[in-house]
Length: 202
Length: 413
Image (cartoon, rainbow over all chains, first blue to last red; front, side):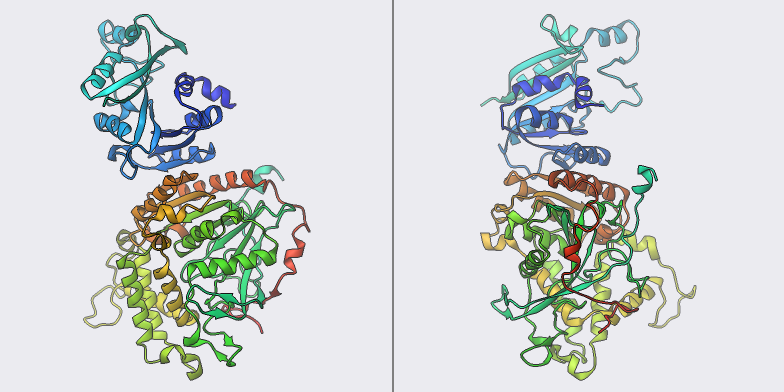
């Protein structure tokens, strides 16, 4: 598979790259195989580090030539100084965190800005599957069965915005996507993937 | 032969140690000077035409230049990192030119306390100067000069070897592209130093020690060295690993109600101690534990490790092992933090291995796969590519006097 093919399945990459300033410092939490960092390094020239706990992902990051730090996010970002990164990114990981609240606050302690991307549980397909089908939603954005999902804290776009309002988090930008396209009408209903950029409200 | 066949890991085969004499005096950190000295080293693989594919492998407390392969006269004497280094192995000698060197003060042919001091005609013994990690790096740099290696593709080591890799990045930032810093600490803890001190006391209080000048008395402080090794060995293993290996198994199946060997673990430690004290020099043990104690690059920067590592420009792989209580992962994370503060390229892996400090020498699929992947990146970085053609590194093989290793580890005169 070429890089382009690998990246094409990850619509949030372009959005995030569009937000990140050139040459910025980036910490990517739960960076998986490191392809987002590779993309940001290639397109924006960032200085980036990923954090991963899984051995196979750490190995994948090394193979992808990105810096990775093996560490458990659930224990916070101990060892990282306050304000030591321009951006702290949590892409497709927020919903799989146990300590969701803590990690968002940690992002804004260590980073000047935070970026999250998560599947929108408010998407109409999810609502339809629960409301009409009477079953937990399974879709491209949420490809797991209820019994094998790594997702612990699924939320909707409205939920996240309410969370930010209640935690002194100021949202700077929001882009909602579905099938790789931006959704501007009824985003909490028609968007399957949400990407937010935010900072601490002073 | 298909490509898969050529990638099967193999031994580097017969290794030939060589000795190089250095006539230019070397000033040591202590202020002392060695007017001349010899270093014993081995090489595997070939240096490429660009001289860009050389990797230095640094040894820890009790090891040597014999990193990989075996000796023709002593085929059971296999290099201490043979699972890591060889054709098709994580550090692939089909791509890299690998150098192992016995450090100054050593007891495997390099100038050390047992060598004859040209000024007196007698073994150095107690008069051999205390050497430091930085002194070793200086000597290694001079070896690199003689071998025609302007810049290492990587310097790699575990434990004390990792300290040397770290010291390379700040002593010669322009001569090292990558540092593999494994089972490492940026400085010994009080507990670490305490263990070393007990080991040294065991040696220096042995009646056969004679203040370090035991060579003239025709004896060696074997009992002390044996104890030092037994103690050290315990600290290299984890509680779990020892329990797994020995449990409370009894040699004869029942308690003997004496102070001889009852438990398997006692037998094992005695065996290890006996073996070690049969070939290792007690003065070298003192020197190397002292080098460990003294290593503390942050000390010269008011305890600021980030400031100490600021000159480094290399890329880093830092690896720790969860069960290593001698140099625990928290110590490796101090190195990581200092590198992050300097925005250096660094990958940090914390391998969930049960074996304790010695895990860095053992087979662990995740660990070996990681080092392999990292060296793929190093190869790309330095253009190591595939095996250089036969003869390209031939000049190197003429450097130094070849030594014939006898069964039992000694050298032929």
